[in-house]
Length: 66
Image (tube, rainbow, N blue to C red; front, side, top):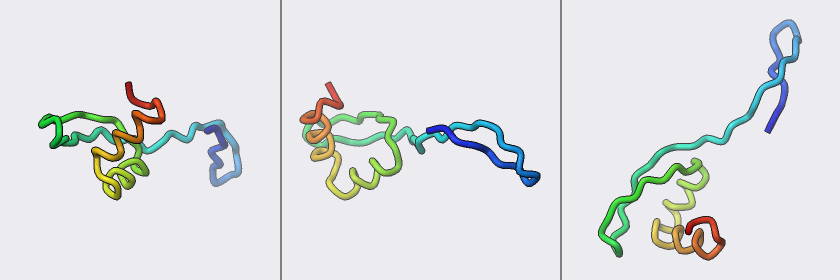
């Protein structure tokens, strides 16, 4: 997303809004291996709620992961 950075004197300059990405290692017990993913913090909440195996399965079904 793009927007304006507004100073105290009300001068507007362009800025970018970047997603909050984190690099995180996950252990997959079915495959007995660690994987490293760069995920957003909202995706981390989803992984914590569903579990890594279910989240990976949903991502593969949607075509996000190969």
